[in-house]
Length: 291
Image (tube, rainbow, N blue to C red; front, side, top):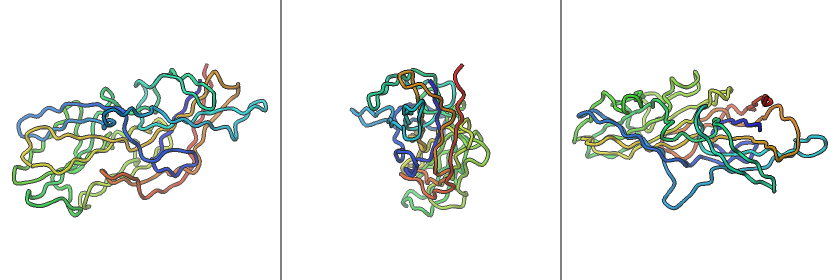
């Protein structure tokens, strides 16, 4: 069975029927240590509401331009939220589309969300502090903490202290920390910029450089602290998996291309949609036949 996965900005403006912004399906939690007055975090990924079970995949059959010996070939485009790195567990099961069954018992690829055991090694956190008597507004700047790297190995703690009971504080975070991503693929708005931080993301051309980009934003909270601040992360990207199977007609697929996909966009952490879509291009992944 051949499989290939590409990541895209979750914009809905693709040549294939790809859904818009992601919802998160896997819940995980990491408890942060809290030494004294240091700011620490508890990290989790947003789960579905109680009683709801999200579909693991959404499957489409594509056969317009695929032929083999005069017989149309089916290529299943599977869309799901989030990306992972190699070596992590993925799904297994049967997918049926148009009466064709494809068994997907497979090793991990970059199409499954990060979970508790695979949370990124570090995250970037910015903090906004302002008087307790005042409210949040978009003129606030991250003067208290700006793009501070906070690591899983360090128990999600920082060297920064809670500002005190006379203040309010808000946190905004993204993961993985940008130094772990390919050069120039992720930029953060300047420290002097007002409002929630803005990420500018360029999808790496190399699939190996595409990873699960997560973001989190807190409501305003008392500056006195007392417990680790909860960061609930959401997936910012969508994975597209193309699958063939043994139940399908014989044929050879040498590459898969997503045409006219936006390769760059901006996202204000805490918002629901990408903006500034640009750099429309084709993404192609060559396939190597299994031995």
